[in-house]
Image (tube, rainbow, N blue to C red; front, side):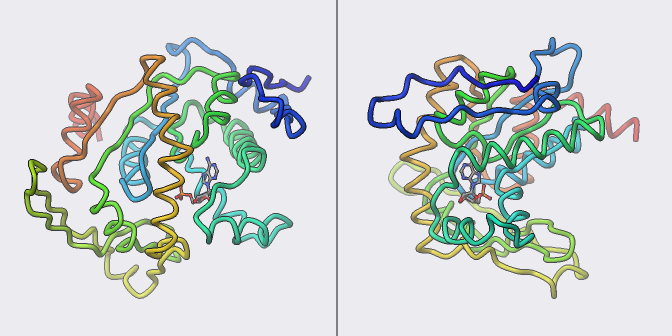
Length: 274
Ligand code: AMP
């Protein structure tokens, strides 16, 4: 039987006519059942503004913990590349820096979770989801999130990082050509981040995301503040959030993040076992 996600916020009368019930089919319901955390892998969420590094740190943690990294932005880009029925509509939304509807995102995520379930995946780190209170409520209605990591970085650095982002069109890995050196000013500490350059075989295949232009990134940051920042409060009020101010690039931030997550020993044990 299909699991119906009914624990939504009370809709206002104006939004009532647009009110839809989201359903996950039976496979997704199995994937997202409320298993005891002891009997499954971690179910974490990464929050943070565009360009903060959610993908970088979430994918590293996923490798360490052996869970899938599920980025809804990647699911959207896969849908765009597939030239399926949604691709035209999605291209316009993404290229304007707007959010795709909750309904479409839930449907893409459901499909991804079902495919993972079929392969025997357990646990996940979600990156870029939930991005609206409605999405957070829908997720809360079907499963327990153990921890939400809220990555933070100064605004001027976020823009530079988005503009420097490059993706290898062949292997799909993310790199960054920006070399960031911000001086300490008005009580804010200085910050330096070395570029994250690709190996030579990716160098000639680098592409820039079509939504990583200055105008679109500025709009994405505005939308984040309007629609996604309330999601931080949603999890803060439930005592699930770990606030993490990135102190710099990967060499400075990764060990500190592991320490904040009590995973520093875990990484040593994993490397020793490898
Ligand atoms: P990202 O790679 O996370 O920056 O996502 C790229 C684009 O995909 C976003 O600007 C949105 O248009 C869309 N998108 C990704 N995740 C979501 C989401 N959870 N809700 C709505 N739109 C999303």
